[in-house]
Structure formats: structure tokens, C-alpha cells
Image (cartoon, rainbow, N blue to C red; front, side, top):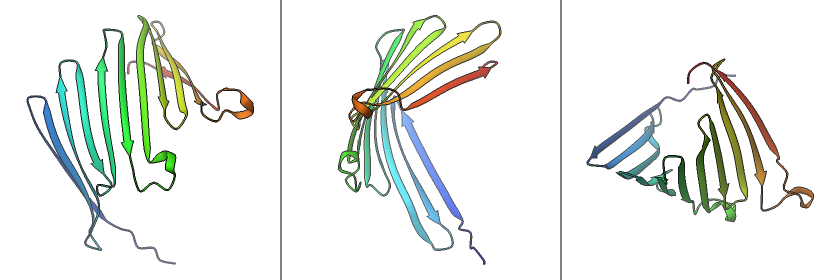
Amino acid sequence: MCHKKKTYVDASAVVGHNGLSAGGCVSADVAAGTIGCYGVGVQYEHSDIVLALTSSDKFRSHSFSAYHPVNKDTTVAFNFEYNPDSKCAKKQRILCAGVEHNAAIDTVVKAKASSTGCSSLSVEHRLANPNVLLAFSAGFQLLAPKNGACSPDKFGVQLTFGDI
């Protein structure tokens, strides 16, 4: 049995000036001579906020994002995705919010929640000697908990040795 492999060409470009950036990307199937997908985005960055608006998948999916360092220890971010072509109604409009907080000099706590009910929590701690990053994470389903309890359905443990 013979399988034909497809060859794609991807191109992207970004221009920016004074905190404002705009760009786009396109993917083409060389053999068929067709455009696979394309998208555009704009981003505004000021001293303490980053705002971005993107459109992808042939302008069928759109997102708006915001990133803001509240203070030296805490950062918040938001993302809203709109995909009217999604077959699942609750995935047509998704709002996500996240926070990262430096709880101590070597400890970072991260949390994220979504309008679909998915949430996650991560705690990272860096040891000085030996130079190791230790992280524990868990994922939860808040809107439809199993057996009426909101216990984690995903777990993760990470060990990273050396500088990262």
C-alpha cells in the first residue's frame, strides 16, 4: 500500500512599533495548491498590561487575552475564546482565568479555572542544593464532580534538575 505524503509550506510575519504588534500566518498544501489555514493577530503592550486579539482557523476561531502583573508577586491573566463552529455548545464560548503568585522566595503557586469547569492547581518549589525544581499539580472538574465530590481527576509530579 502506498501513502502519499503531503508537503506544507508555513509562512508567518509580525511587525511591531511602540507596544503595538500585528501579524499573520498561512499554511499551504504545496501538492494540492490550496491554503490549509490562516490567521491574524494584534497585540498591545504597555508598562503593566498586555492585550491580544487573534483570529485563526480561517477566521472561524477568535480569542481575546489579557495579562496583568498586579504587583511584584502576583500576576493574573484572562482569555476568552469564541468558536461558533464548535459542535459542543459549551465549547463555543470559553472564558479562562489564571493567577500566579510567588508565595515565598522559592515557591510559586499557580491556579487556573475555565467556564467549562476544568481547573488546575500547581505548586512549584526550587531547592538550592541540589539545584532541583519540584512541582506538584492537580486537575479538577468543578461543574460536574464525580460522586458529588470535587476531588482531582489528574495528578502530576515533576522533578527538574539543573538550571532552567
